[in-house]
Image (cartoon, rainbow, N blue to C red):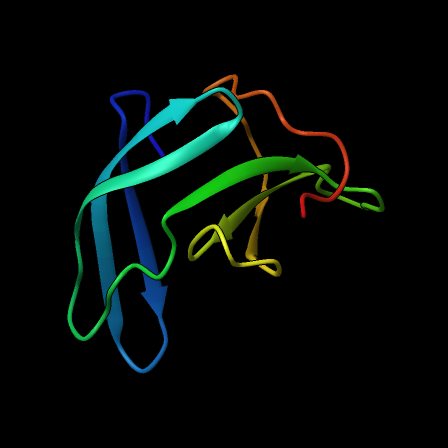
Length: 94
C-alpha cells in the first residue's frame, strides 16, 4: 500500500501474479477498490483493518483482510512498517 492510495499484491506460487488497485480509508477500515486482477487471480478481500497483535515476537501489527461483512475469520499479513500512519485497532477484530 502506497501513499498515493494504490496497492499491489504479488503472489509467488506456481508462477507470479499481481493484483493492483486503489484503496480508501474510512475511520479504522481500509476498503479496496478498482481492483485489476492478475492471471487467474481475483481479489478475495473487500476490506481490512490494521490490528495490534495480542502475542507477537518480531511484528506487532497485522493487516487483517476480510472477504465481506459476514467473514469472521479473515486473513493476516504481518506489518513490518506502517508509514501510512493508519491507526491499528486494539486486539482481535470480530
